[in-house]
Amino acid sequence: MGDCATKKQKASSSVGGRRRRRSPTPSPSSSPPTPNNDLFSSDEQQEKYAQHFLNREILESKYLEDGYFEGKNFQFYDILAEVGLTEFVSLRRHYHPELVRVFYSNMSISATGVIRSEGASEGVGREHHSLKAFSIHLASPPNGGLTSKYGVFCVLPMIYNILCGFVSVLDVGMASSSGKRMKTMASKRKEKEPEQPHSSRFLSRKHEKHFKVVQDRRLLMERKVGMIPNFAPQFGEQLLGNDWGKLATYPTPTNIAVVKESYTNARKIGDYPAENYLGYVRGHAIRYDPDSINNFLNIVWAGEQCQFALCMEEGADFDDVERVLCVPGGHFQRNRTGSVVNIRRTDLTPLAKYWMAFSHANIQPCSHVSDITLSRALLLYCAIRNLNVNIGQVIADEIRMCANTTNNKAPLGHPSLITHLCKIAGVDTFAPPFERPRKAIDEAYYKQYCGGEEAAQPVPPRRTHRERGQA
Image 1 (cartoon, helix red, strand yellow):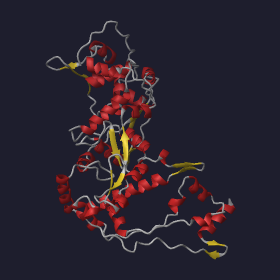
Image 2 (image 1 turned 60 degrees about the horizontal axis):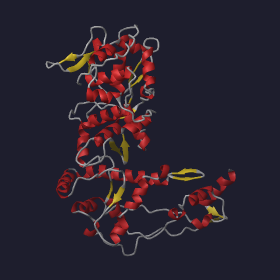
Image 3 (image 1 turned 120 degrees about the vertical axis):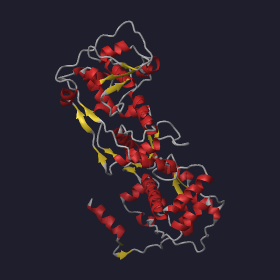
Image 4 (image 1 turned 45 degrees about the vertical axis):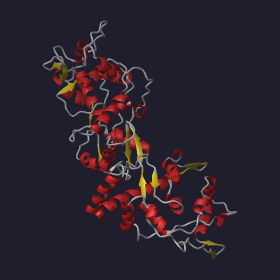
């Protein structure tokens, strides 16, 4: 280990007691081409270049002299050679400063996270600044990097994240320095070209505008939930019988900014997002489809009929629902036409009240606690009856409805779950501010809010004859 450290020190300082000569740094081309209209796809793009990039300094690149390592035992060089990066780190060529600045000026990130730098020219211009194939490779490197016997060498994700950060900084810097002028340019672009993803944070300008609305919406945090075997052992049996154990334990502090950006880009505005159950956060596609959620919750859904969906479509035996959920004398509230509306919380059994608190926190987020709506009551009925429920589908639909609601004051549900999904997708979720889960639902909660220390009533047996009403 000591020999290795000595060799590394020599490699960076001297060879054989003499300071090694360095090859000349790559220099600009003697006759760089002058940027012209052929390098820009619009007048606004050229104006952006003139304002923000024309006089920017270019940071000279560094490189390794591969000849120095020949015949020497350096693990670092062996790693570079194994993953095929020796030519990349030894690259030294002339460059055109203006083309470098044009490349960065035209850079953007697509809805799928692909970094592009596009222009309108033929020949040399396009050859230098069209990076579509290269950027697609950067957007989805194998297993997060290049694998060697020494581990994963993460040069591609590092370059990709640096470029994402560069685009993000440009967006913020230009917005702050241009002021009203940026608004004028945006209005012109809206007339000339279709809406396109234009930054590392938002899918479109309309999404960026919508973010101001989302910023004012509060988070409705999840809760951890206890099994309360001393008061209602049926709850734990029903929870584990449905394979929902992780649903009660996963809540952790959530990244507020990440959740609000995710909800902003999950809203369907124009052509974006291109798929259902798809969000976008800082260059990463965030999938919150039923399969992704079930996988996170360690739930295997074999594709059987979801009984909750069936109840919602075909109706349910409301008499049986009342027997399962309500205390004697409790019942559904109906409107003037006789249609079922909700059940008052005071009419629920202690067990149903506990399930209601759990569902309103982690499944179908709701801050209203005085009663439970029909759809939420049917979910509780299916859970207590141990009927098949595709919980990933239920939660995915809740997130999609929350993202697309017209109620600008509606709280944002499932923030901890969304933070977990963003982290899985590669988003940095470790930067504050954070918000903690709400107080846990446990025995103390049961005693205080669910009817004292009495045990919940046993679930009545299923009736053989079912009379279905219309939901």
